[in-house]
Length: 433
Image 1: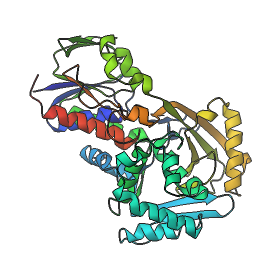
Image 2: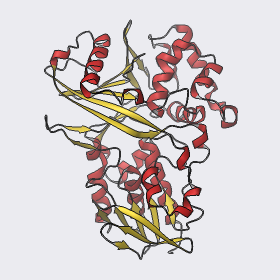
Image 3: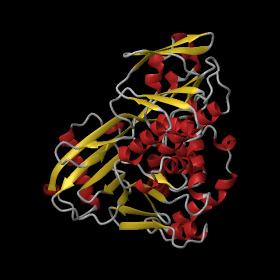
């Protein structure tokens, strides 16, 4: 039986281990942290005792690999899937506008939904529809050197359409400024969301904390099939001989006797354990990061009625309603990281008041601000051209996973799961080393 060591217990590592275990391979996951989950996890807030996420995540019906993974580990009951797309947008002037797939008849449902989106003028709505009609014919060559902003302007999208529709969509999907992010990746995401059937654009939200969505089920699935989960174990180096990893050195032991290794850690962590002579194969110096800021706010009385809202033309991007508290999320939030928590709370509450007249800062009973400084990579063309593939040329038994690898997707849950699935698929097809 082939034995595989998976370094990293986040989404990429756990999906790789789950798919490997399902194929009958002996798998061991080594995780530096005392918990599973990587950069998508939940924890118990000390003050309120509520389970909160380090950052709210939205998934979509086009996340086919994520849905496959959750089905595999018997965890589909932890998510809520919309029957069809429905997103509440709030504008300071016009109030609530709903972008909704009005019927179940694809693609008529999406077309009618866009035409009914009252946050934009009819001319802008029609312009967006024209762009969508051209999406199936867009290829990478035609937009290779363009940013999202430049592409949208080339497509004659108005300033209002960009600000009130495209920017919310792009920043949420890519966690990057549209001046930096590659149009190639954005177009790829748009195609998956809007051109792959009725369910593809439906929003998916976890019913539980992120960790509860997949960590216990993954661990159960892997260990029941003979796998091992090792927590609080830091990999310190990889020893390579004759183009193969022969030993993995941790602070607790030296591991040998395995056939293959999957690296499913962030690039800055992988760089630390990789021998210097192999680092030139990876684009470490070209990776730039973007942050996500989340604020969980508890209220005396929660008067928010919808599950989530997108805010138009605001430094805050999304508001999620969890009954006892709300979560406010700002993607691409580097400009906010230097602000103190009290200053951020005041800014957030002032902004919420502009969009929701009923909101009152005096109703806040508790809050927690979370800054994820290296939440995602920025999908710039210079990095996208050299993202590492699943196979490592110079080390025969090393395979790469993680949202930064060459999945064709931005740094999303779907990208992480797909990378783990790709690594598992490659290894399953290989003979015992």
